[in-house]
Image (cartoon, rainbow, N blue to C red):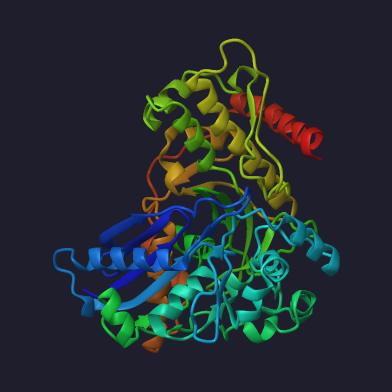
Length: 486
């Protein structure tokens, strides 16, 4: 067997899968959960990068311990990582402070200031606002900083001993020129003129990040000299792992946050900044919608009813009619990126007797998050994206009721990818693509990935009557959001 290891270093945990490309089968997988640092001020969301390394070490050893797996059979490693997080290193390449994450909204003021300086929208979640926050709130930490990385870049550095970055993940920093696929010096200078000096070399699509070092081999159990692909942000890797490597494939990822993306051969730039104008890690572009509240909202409802598991809540919600009898949840529990309301809160509208039951509240969570996604998809369509059907990935995609609601809300058929961990699969496929190119074969990422992306046979078709109910609810969500937070 020739195996490829995909690592997905996320917000809630790290996952690994080992892919045998010849059989198109995952031969081993592992996961380790972790959480955010506790005791931080409201809006702050941070993790110690050492937590990621401990999890990578655990999952890597676990998959290597699977029957019949030999570390020497792993031809290459790919890393997917949560986007936008700020990892700062000192002269000795030691971490200066915990990483501020994509879901940290404590930098809203800095994001507004940068947006004013640059004359374009800088979302609160992007890396740029975190750097300005660090300069203003912890100047001693910024003074110590010599290297600025993103989470997956840091894992690549520990694996290889080499600093690097690639265009996909870099395009979520707020100081990257997506159309030129190069750092934006003017934006960097608006933050701090020495920021450019802190950035690592930029890799080209398909260029490896390096090889597993002797120290990393000892720590992670891998063979020294194993190729390490450039990898990318979790959305870029999820695109590869779900088949969004050619035009026309639209993917919805139902995780802690929710994303919708599609591959484009040309840049797609949103003047309002609501649709992120990302580069794809494999070349081309990946216009992307991201909402900050998705399974985090359904988990809050589940936690409120500890006697119910998700299956029980879903059965109860299925008995509630579409539109939830007028109950509408504005799902902005963590603030929101689209719409751009980092300081918004959730709101429950239309309360009447009998509606504060588990089934109603759970359905309101499914509908509210889906309606907010649909408003973002409307914006994606307005920019020219074709949305004829959807592929679902992520943990929430396993819920049949949610799949049905999404089909009705979006008005298009919905299918589910067989491999729900599309980020880890995409990282493994990028490792395979990079390794194949290193063998002298001129192939595209799509050529490598497409045969390994399988879909379930089930197709969920939209229902016209329910669609009309949701069209009204979507308008109400937009109007209520504007009234409360506009």
